[in-house]
Amino acid sequence: MSLRLRVLAIAALSVVLHACSSSTTLLESDVPLPDGMTVVRSADLRRDAGTLTGGRFLLAGRVRDAGEVLSETLGRFESGGWTVVDSRAGLDLATARLEKGARRAELSIHRRALEPDMSTGTLEVTSGAAPAGG
Image (tube, rainbow, N blue to C red; front, side, top):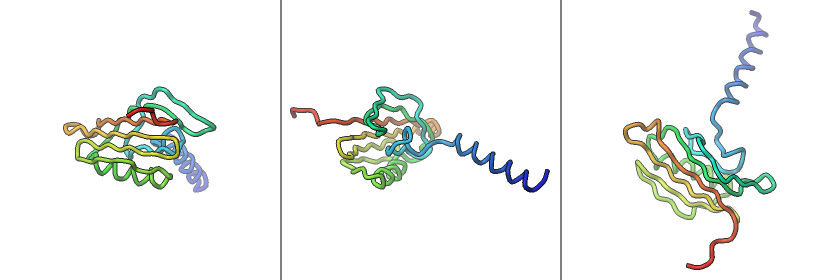
């Protein structure tokens, strides 16, 4: 096999592997996913002019420390213009509430102590006015 053909084969393989790799954002939006986690189920998806405005997502993947995963993910949210409203981090459970304009996101990461590669999480995105009352 010639050098040029090898280079082309490696380039093609790289493109295929990149396309198969897990995404770092939710549905090509400005909502980041925790590293090592993927969406395994989604419901109630809503978009407005290409912006993800709603949805509920079940996440699964490898989590060694829920607090560390949350901290890294919150940094990516903040880089994307989101504001952290509240967060709580621990080894086995980490949660956060975030806002960006009229949108809100709630993220929860649960580490499975016996099988951290099969950890879970939830992410819910909502938009609109806050509910009345209190």
